[in-house]
Image: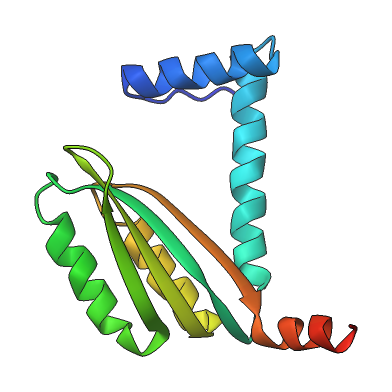
Length: 141
């Protein structure tokens, strides 16, 4: 099946550079692999269950109208699952926010997906471990 899409020039140039560095012969193959990776990450995030502890890393353009206010509102809505946060100025435009989370993954996932949907947010990554998984690891030693 053929599709078409619009991309910013700089994003396509970066993608092409990665493909070249990795030895891809075809942009289509690179896009297929990127889509597969995206789907696998989404499925992995949806398969988690129970109590989790983790970090949500967010990169956003603080010049984008309304992003900071919306981002703050979301964090306030999920304050019961946020243990701490750290804000780092990356450059003149971009900020990195590290949010430490703990609680039921259903709510942590909701928090993560709401942040992902914000315009002006460039990247979001959730890294977590189940609190029971940590107990199991410790009991083995």
